[in-house]
Image 1 (cartoon, rainbow, N blue to C red):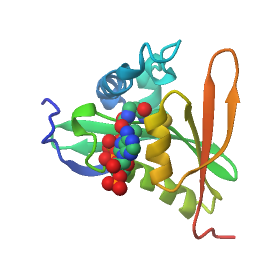
Image 2 (image 1 turned 135 degrees about the horizontal axis):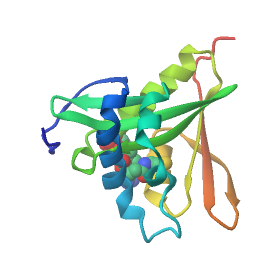
Image 3 (image 1 turned 60 degrees about the horizontal axis):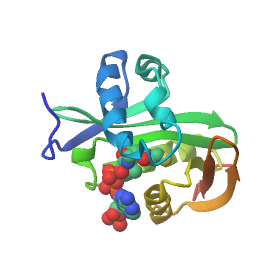
Image 4 (image 1 turned 180 degrees about the vertical axis):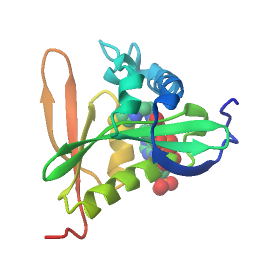
Length: 161
Ligand SMILES: CC(C)(COP(=O)(O)OP(=O)(O)OC[C@H]1O[C@@H](n2cnc3c(N)ncnc32)[C@H](O)[C@@H]1OP(=O)(O)O)[C@@H](O)C(=O)NCCC(=O)NCCS
């Protein structure tokens, strides 16, 4: 079934290998707008989505029509790193990205971790606004010959010590 702007979020669940093609499509559609803005294709466009789906570290946002969003986490004790957050463009602006971010924050909190860290390309200014709106603060920036990255962090509000 096709994903449309009417494909409403029904829940979040761990990704499975059967989701691979949908994850690849979401990445292509969501990150495609950055082709040309940055020198190299954004890293999520180069991933093997069978591996991403099978990693056990990716969760998907689902609707009755199929997968509409995804997020991957990576442990980096005492933080959880949020990677590859993407929502199908026709479903953006409906709070799905925020739900996926909050889900990762809850994962960090319930694991007793200090918070969530992430980075984005400096050229992707709308992402920096998005995360700042969700309470993330810029910690630092790094520039090398390949990329200019901005790092952000949000501390867990109630850490279990
Ligand atoms: C970033 C992304 C995941 C946001 O998903 P989304 O479902 O559209 O976001 P939401 O609807 O949950 O928005 C949450 C909040 O952020 C705000 N927001 C959303 N997009 C924004 C933008 N481009 N700039 C500033 N604020 C933004 C919303 O207004 C909303 O604020 P509110 O809660 O006060 O109403 C989505 O735009 C996307 O897939 N982008 C392409 C892939 C990408 O660049 N991912 C990030 C990699 S670091």
